Image (tube, rainbow over all chains, first blue to last red; front, side, top):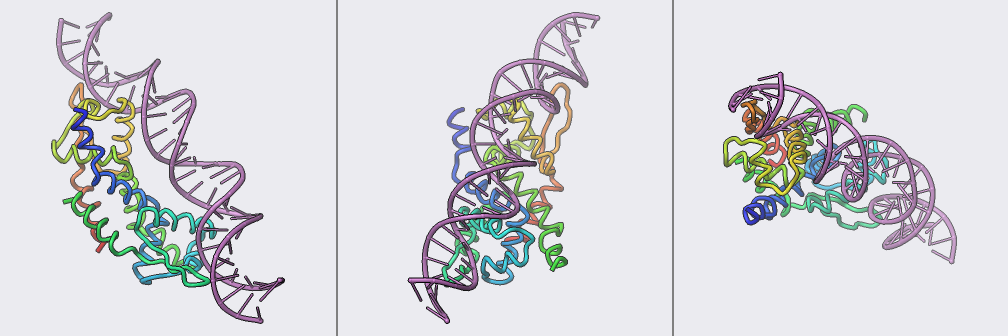
Length: 101
Length: 101
DNA sequence: CATGCCTATCGTAATTTTACGATTAGAAAT
DNA sequence: ATTTCTAATCGTAAAATTACGATAGGCATG
């Protein structure tokens, strides 16, 4: 039973799915991702202009998305250009597809 | 800009996606859903036997899944039979598909 | 009608999340 | 070297999440 448990809870796919889902579990973060999908890429400042949130809050959400691997940032002084992390995005897509299959 | 914001954040699809994602944002809840997918249906007690968590904790996770609409419970005295809420499940699947498209 | 079974709910504690303003840090330009 | 601009980080407060044990409630069975 312990083994079965291991199998059910601690498998990598479940962990990965939970991780991605957690990143998507806030409307602002979804909106940021949608925005990135439309714009291809954008800067933190752009988001601060669009969303009614403090700069530090936006930055925190970006950090979460980065932690989950869904976005990546490139330093273009003096700004930072954020884009969807295409590779991980595909992985996430596949994992969700598989889950809902 | 307020209007655009409205459009970006407060649209129903974004809210729905965040709601479903939040329900999936914990490994235990994903494991419960996988278990339900395999078993078609099951009772709370079954889950308590499988997972190393207190009965009250399982109950709480079931409540979250119910709140998100992903499962439904049917009273079969003295037990409660839980199943995937097929209709909402399809909706969730579609919304995720659409998002990752 | 009392008993037993199953599960929800309550009360609670520890941790995490979300939001803000203020500060810091890095790089370019003056 | 100082100023300027952008964005991360810090410190903090409020709210939400997660977990537990204990309790309560609904419904059959004896």
